[in-house]
Length: 365
View 1: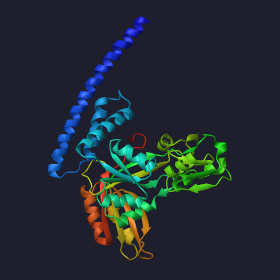
View 2: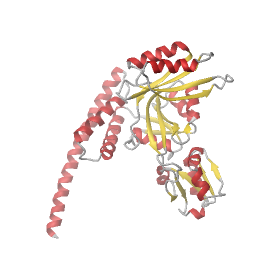
View 3: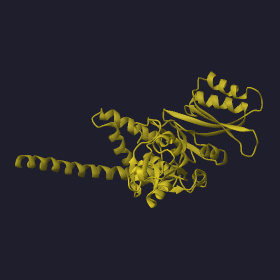
View 4: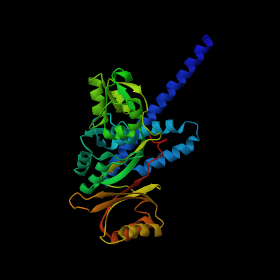
């Protein structure tokens, strides 16, 4: 036993020495980030460079050779990178609040805990904060794998002049919570309309006759459940940690793999990362076959169309704008040529941004 204790103590001494060396290196890295920040400021370059960050992850994963689990490696260096980014300039990020929502969690996953997060009451408020320059970035949901597009986000692109500069996919786990953690105490279930829709079949089968209460956010539902012992709420993991509620049933979403895609918006786009998307907002000419003409241009160029969605123009009856996601970057020759050709046949054309494609949800930080 004494020999075991001695061995443990020796290993711990080695760990302490390694920790000290790591701290010294982290301090040096932080100072390097400060210097880069000064150089970027002199050249008026953006603080956030997703292409550079993707290259860092790719290099580290290659050097690692699977010795550390990929998820752990990404998580560790994600916090290091975002903390060092804050040395250049404190990144302010608006999200659909209050704190504890899926949008808040998406922001933390993308920008790390070092960023300063500013909750907004509506998705439109997030766009407004970014357009006015009061924050550097915003995080907004754009579509869910089971419920489809988030129309408030698509409609805001018609009103506000911002650029898409990133995206991420967040696996959604909807937990049924209440103050006691006992499902039999629940007499009504509150949540944002999206989680309620994502769990409608589970609620119908397991809580028949129990009314649902649509709320402005999952956090507002958490607060209601915290205050009323007979109210249940459907919330994510982050909200469970922030409020005095307990999980009655974890993961009640109707479909496994339920994932929400979020967009990062800002006032500029980014250079090629090697794996990108380009988003467009188009108005079609008022003539037969106008949509087919656009699709033919893209097809002839060999451009893959990842998404197409139409939304009505609020001020003009029976007129629509189309959102399109193309696989590739506006700096890619075929994307540039395709967009120029599309622009010529459309009544309205706006490039919303080119940005790195989201990582697979299983490896997303």
